[in-house]
Length: 244
Image (cartoon, rainbow, N blue to C red; front, side, top):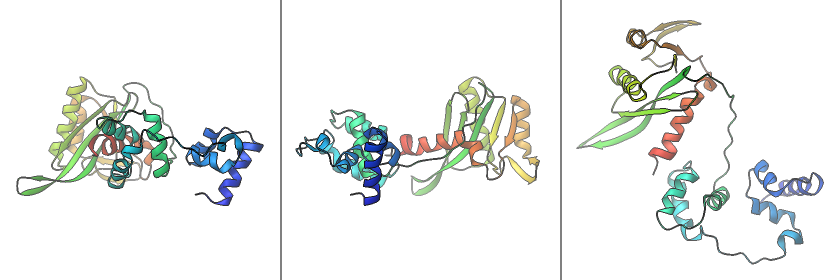
């Protein structure tokens, strides 16, 4: 159900501004069927008989997955239910998921880089895993190229300096190369001290950069858009690689 104000806005956009139903649904972040019903016209409500949807047999499973993993992507769920016999397409699935999960919107500033110019590096925590009789913290080393979005990730049981350096070296070997600049969050493994624009780098990072000929660069404090590439990649790893 929608409130009176939303219904009024839908009818104004459709009848006065001549917007299409899909455009209205996208703008307001609601399902297109909700827009149809709000219009209350014979054109879209001549029949009240609804045909079964291909997603109906999987509705409970999809809801359970979204309850457990609220940000799980529709493409990942599509893969899961297709293995269970789903015959519909991903568009039908996205429409159904839009009905049961609110649309999330993100504001960001797009930064452009040249090929081979910049990469972004960060750690991500992935909770704990059972190893024998002990539980160990699981961390993921992530590095991505800002232009091509090429990705290298590796899981470790801690975020020690040795593993941080090993992640770099393994990525360079996997790619058979590296970018000119590597951008970091203000990690203790990279920045020992910072006073304004003056940065005291960790000596191990200085040694690594001298050997591989890249320039380490820390992000500005509270400038989340500068490291948006790697944060987006970490989100992909959490929701489409590690989840479920």
